[in-house]
Length: 406
Ligand SMILES: *Cc1c(COP(=O)(O)O)cnc(C)c1O
Image 1 (tube, rainbow, N blue to C red):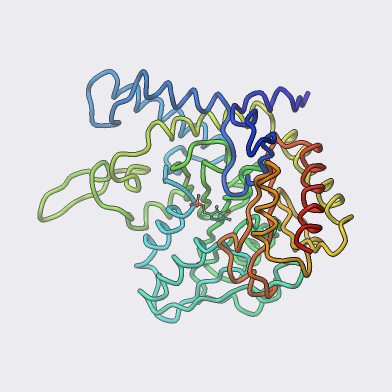
Image 2 (cartoon, rainbow, N blue to C red):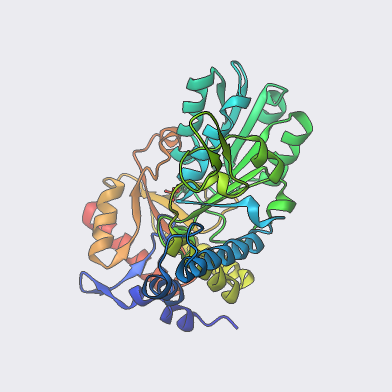
């Protein structure tokens, strides 16, 4: 049974008022709120077992190490990775993508090609541009249409033995569009030897992931968008590729032996986890996985899809409101503007006065905004604790903003 009041009661922050109104938190695409179980896990770590991992012989260090490895195995199961050492703790999607783009440098030559899509977050654009600068490789971009749907015939024309990386998100953070990654991965495998990188920052919070079935080479996501603390994230990589590529950061924890003449690297996953990790956060990420498993992916998805459908219906009843990517297959996000009415941030400010938190602006996706020739959008994004009543209040708030700004 899915009991929304029970779910809401697990999120302490939701019972607050903001500007004198009950908080309506619809900025989950930027970061989700945290359930008590995650906050308690983090607190318990710092009040009972805080110690540095791997080095210490003492009891607390062993406990901390053990708990972190338990969390790694929870994530392994959560995304169905074959081995626990294919799961690497990072501080988020951005770090994961930069790690990959740096670690593959030696495999990229001048005139090789890297394919991304029009729908990417800046963190899945800039690291590849930097790689191109280092190596002389070229960046190619899968175009989209006015509904935010990627034009896959571009792949038929552009995949070749020169293609070394194909990197794209499973769900667009700006529009909520779900990209047909299964089809893209199939096409890529059939026509190139490219490594396939999937940015799962906006898909992991909403639906079940199976990296083996997906057959990607890398899959990255952030903990903080799936109910875990900030400063946590995961890089999954296939074993054979992780063994081949170079470490990103050098330092403590990632060496097997270190001398001035030669250093050898530690085994997976530690080769990619230099320095002291965010132990408390990484353990709490395991608690976030437990939370999602306990609620159940089917319940999360059914509820969020119903919210999305309802929000789209309610918002489209408002005259002169345009939803971007309206006709695409979507999840978790409605991105819209009031035509002829001020700028997105004015709408966001009025909504804030009503206790409603939305994001306004370019959402770290300036190319998409340029495509539509706009500066930004208003984005409402959903999590499992949002309600239909909250969407009614949102729609009323948008009408009010339209009256005030029109
Ligand atoms: C949020 C987001 C990122 C960046 O994640 P960080 O947690 O800020 O590192 C990358 N890609 C997408 C699709 C995102 O939504």
